[in-house]
Length: 207
Length: 207
DNA sequence: TTGACTTATGACATCGTGTCACTTAATATA
DNA sequence: TATATTAAGTGACACGATGTCATAAGTCAA
Image (cartoon, rainbow over all chains, first blue to last red; front, side):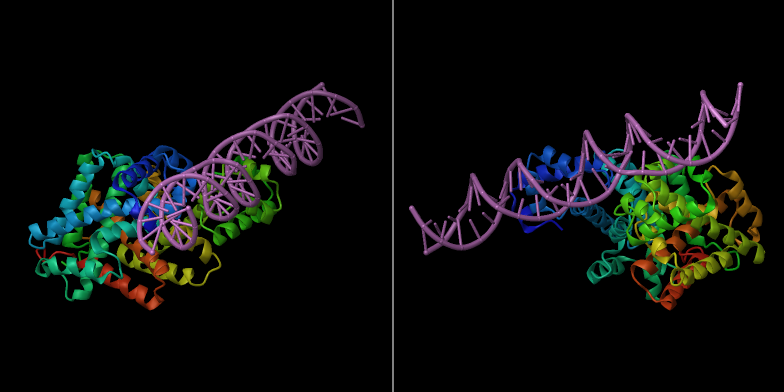
C-alpha cells in the first residue's frame, strides 16, 4: 500500500501521480514499466516516488485495487437487483466488463494487468467477487445477498466452491477474449456456452 | 525457443545448462532470476548464454515446456487406461500432480512457475491438456480418446468448452494448494467438492 | 526565531541486460 | 597437409533501471 505521505498529498497532486502511474502501466506491463517514466510524467523527483510507494509493484497493485473495488461494488449492486441470482449477476458482470474493456480509457492498463496476470493479480480479481479471504465481511456480504435456492448445493460450505468455480471460469473467459482478440459476439457466445454447461453439469451420469 | 546452437551441444553440456537454468528459476521467480547466476552455475560465458537463448524468458518457457510435455503424455495415457473417462482422468492427474509437487525435486521450480503465473504460463498449462490451439493434432488426440457418452454435451463443439472449464478449475486448485499451503487432504477434498459440483451442475433449475 | 517534523530532491552506487568485436574451435575444400 | 569457411565461445562495455541517502526546503507551533 502507498504510504501515509501519499494520502496526505493534496487531491490534484495525488490525481496527477495516479494518472502518471496508469499511463505508464498502460504503456508497458509491470515488468517493463519504469519508475523513471512515471516520475517524468508526474513531474516529481525520483526520491518522492519512493516516499509514496514501496516500488513500482506497490503502485501497480494499488491502482489495480482501485479498479477492482469499483467493479466489486457493481457486482454487489447486481446481486441486489436480481434478488440474489448469482448466475445472472455473474453473467451481467461479464458482459459489462467486456464492453468496458473495448471502450473505456482504462482498457490498456487492464489489458496489461490481465494478460500478465500473476498469482497476485488473479487473487485480486477473485477478490472482485469474494473479497479478501480474511476479510470475512466481504464474503459475508455476498453470502447475504445470494439466493441459495437458485443454486444446486447441499451445504453452505459448497457455496464457497461455487464462487471459486464461477470466478475461475469467468476470469478465463475475459483473458481469452483479450489474448485471442475474439469479437465481442464470439466471446459472449463462448461464455454463454460455458455458463450453460456449468448450470446443467458436465456429467451425463448425474442427469 | 532455444537456438539450433543449443540443440547442437553435446548432451552433457546441454544437460548442465538446463540444470543451471532450473536451479536459478527454482531460487527465484522469472522476474528476479538473473542470467549472471545461470552462466556462473553452468560455467559458460555470458555471451554463450545469448547464443543459446533469446533471453531468460526463452530459457524459462523452454524448461516449463519440458515439464508440461511429460505431464501431457501422462494425461493421454490416463485417458487410455480409463476408456476415455475425462473426469476420472482429470481427477487422477490432479492427485498425482499434488503428490509430485510435495515430493519431487522440481518442486521449487514449478512452484515459482505456478505462483507467478503469467498468461503465457497459464496457456502453457492449458496445453497440458489441450495442446496448442494451432496444433490440431494434439487436440484431436484428446478428442479421439474421450468417451463422449460419459459427458453431458449435445455437440462436439461443447467439448472444447468442457475442457476449458475443467482446466481452469483444476489449475486454480493447484495454485490454491501451493499459495495457501493447504494440506494434501484439504486440497483433495476441495477439489473433490468442485468436481462434484461441476458434474452435477450449479443450478437447481436444471435438475 | 528557534526547533521539530514532514516532504522533496537528484546524485550515486549497484546491478542486470543485451551486444559486439574478437578469439578459438571445428569442419570442409583443394 | 594447408587453407578457407563456418560455427561456437568470450568478456568488456554501453546502457538503463533500481533503491538509497545526505541534504535542502517547507510547515507549524511555541
